[in-house]
Length: 391
Length: 161
Image (cartoon, rainbow over all chains, first blue to last red; front, side, top):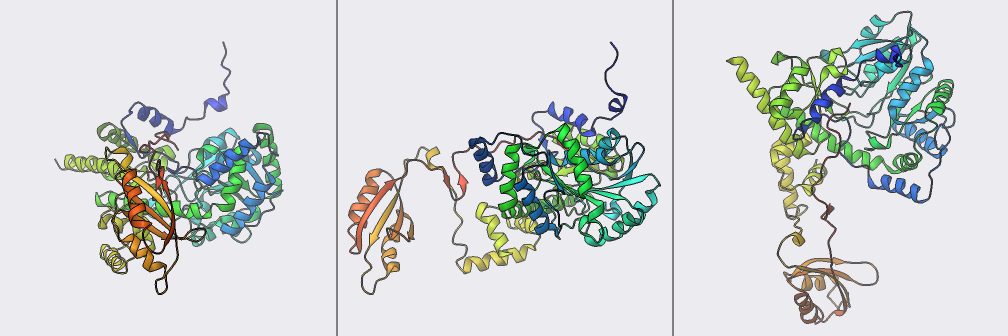
């Protein structure tokens, strides 16, 4: 029988995380610091609204772009939290998680050969989604000495006549890096100078620990050339509800809605009703969760530094990204041995792009008790490595 | 800083000072001083343990008693409350708005114990007009903590992007 798989799909590399996932799953007694989702349950008033919508029999499709009421709440939220101004009817699309928004946006925008600049290390989907949309992914390796921020110089150096889109993944998974207004301004100037478009993945926008998140779309002249991707997963601990949204220029949202309509029809109705509550009454719960993450962030950074690991201070998301370069092995080797010898699972940094090599991602979306236990084992491991290197 | 300290130790009073200081990003000495001050000011009134007695072999009975009183001349509610809360078996006393005046929460060894307290000690106070005793059958949640749930198991996948 001939192969029915497309060459394009076959050429997509499976996620580096997947490989590690299989290893960890064979170790039932491993402690994981490897998840990319909150440890909180979705706040009860949100779950309750989902249950209520089922009780009321709201089990039908919604309009393709999402419940009007939800889009209105999203518009109000984006205005309240980020100072952005969107027309809920024409400029907002409710998607199945932020990841659908990324995929649909790239498909709606790319012609074959168009280049997409992707700062790395980053979330795993930008690159394959670009390839599937016939674009050319161009990684921008971010440097730890810049605290994994994108600089205007680095951006400008990577631009070619084919460059069309810049992905802005901040606050960043896996590094925990953020971009402040001062960091964003020069980048925005370059974007305007070369007439680029920005896909700004702001899924962690509620989880910044020093200053409130600034959306690049809020800078002068940027809203018309930015698509904001966001969602409910991280801020409201709603990963399993699969609900996100995209906000951007009317023509782009219109084209994205076309793809979304054929591929998905509409985002889950139950989730949409629950999300209306999240937007209306969720700010307090979000603040509580943010404070709790922040405490754990301080604890993990402190503990890693105390054991001599080099670790820049992450100011967003819920990850720390310590360097393992002094131990003279690759990220995968480090993560593999840590798992084997101490039964602690972390994600090797190269799973998030080549420039993540030399680092590991540690998630602190765990209870303090679990973090303590796991970090104690990490301490045993690195102390043993140091002793061995002195022998 | 004080509010943040309270928020943490309200849920975990056993946390050690050094760790608390790390979580809050403060100096250990500052945290220690703030706690000492709050103890002085009677903001922090004690460090208790939340025990689910239902899971022990100990027999305990809790009751919630609605108490209606007539305040006597020169003796406001505070004075009557004091007469009530001095008894060691009284767990909590609250002044209420609405149909009755005090909620008294009582812990005794048996229903008889509680009945005896109500009939002999509480009802006989001059200012007490009437009482209504409700026995607690089961405690589901106390002090913001769900008592009936087993320790949380993490059902998330071990590794996700």
